[in-house]
Every structure is written in structure tokens, then in C-alpha cells.
Length: 277
Image (cartoon, rainbow, N blue to C red; front, side, top):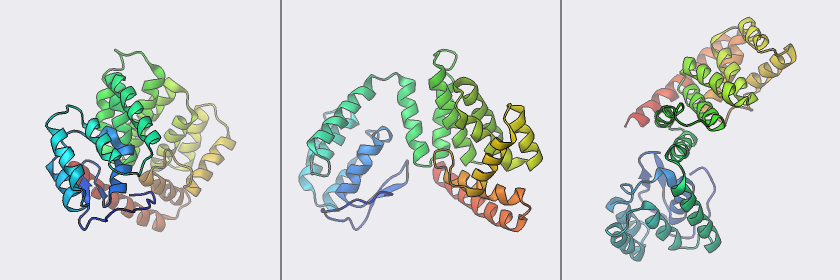
């Protein structure tokens, strides 16, 4: 888990892995944190005997495991069992659990495509870019049917981020521009320029910047961000590394560029193998 969690309960000898995100949890507190922040990615099929047995055998929470076994045969929604898990300890306060339940109720009432976007966003945040891209593509099939420019601008922006992290630069550019067309968000245009910089030289990048009516000061700012590799779009790990590699390419440091690209491609291959499972 990325966050620091103070654990008072038993630590499992064998962690439990959520297969769709490849996240492992080793304590009751980590399990609660994952549930609270990733509910949209947890289906009822995930809440199976494997998890219940892990809670009983690894965490020693026999009564909770028994309640979950009983609930699994009675309730239709995974969320009912998730609330049962959260209520079994004191990691979250009663007020926080109340807020969680209220959020669940709002989620259930959302239109289907908005629920799907929340799911895709969660996969994107978990760096499961292929899974996220697939869901975003399905949502975009409804664009003509559902007239909501801000919503679809956000979908295109996220789809572009998924493409950029998979080094699919053609789609990344296309989707960043579509997001900018629909929403006018400067971050969408900036994302487009970052991707252009990954493929082209400084002259072409400057030309693209001018094509959108932007001046040399804007171009210099873009170059500065590429050089720093600190301010990226939604903290894209692979894309941030790519920015730094591109900066070295634009400044003729091909040795460092080649080295960084080898690392990036190796990481993408590993992620592809994981997400293909």
C-alpha cells in the first residue's frame, strides 16, 4: 500500500491480493483502506471464500469471516459485505462509515456511464492502463447519445493519459486534442504538446505551439516542465520518465535518452504482462 497505515491488528503471513489491481494487503487496516478507496473495483465475485478464509486464517477474525459467509448467501450487493468488514473494527469512525454508505447510495443512483467512468478512473489511478482504456472506449460509444461536453472532455482527457502511459502516442495526441476541443482545459493542450515532444524535434514542437496561437514564452515554459519532469498530468509515472528522456533527446544527449527509454520500455512490458492476465 502506498500510504502509511498504523496497524494494531494481526499481520498476515501471506498477503491477500486483489487480482484486478495487483494490490496486496496484509492487515485488517490495509484491507479497510483498500475497500474505502477502491469500492468501485470490488465486485461480489471478489468477496469469495478465498477472502473469507484469509480473514479467518490469516487475520484471526473468525466471527467476521462467519458473518461474511452468511451474508454472501443472502445479499445481492458487494457493498453490504464491504460495510460489514468496515464495521468489524475501528479503523474508520462511525461518521466516516456513514459517509461511505451515503457515497455508495449516490453511486448506485448515478447513470451507468458515470459509474463506469469512476471505475475506469480507479483503474487509471491504480496504473492499470489497459483496463482503464477499455472502459473509457466503451463510454465513448455513448458520446452521440449523451450530450454532455464537460463529461466527455474528462473521458477523453483520461483516455489520453492511459494512451500516453502505454506509449500509444498517436491516440494520446488525438484524445488530448479532443479533450481540449470539448472542454478547453489548458492541461489537455499541454498534454498534447508533451506527446508531440516525445516524437518530434524542438523546431516541430515550437511550430505546434505557434499553430495554437501561443508564443515563445509558452514554448519555453513547456520545455522547462519537460526538463524538470516534476509537473506532469495526473502524476503519470511512465509519462514523467518519458518527459525527462525527451528533454535529453532534444538536447542531443542520446546516451541518457537511450538508457531512460530502455527502462521505460521494460516497465511497460512488465505492466502489459500483468494487465493481460
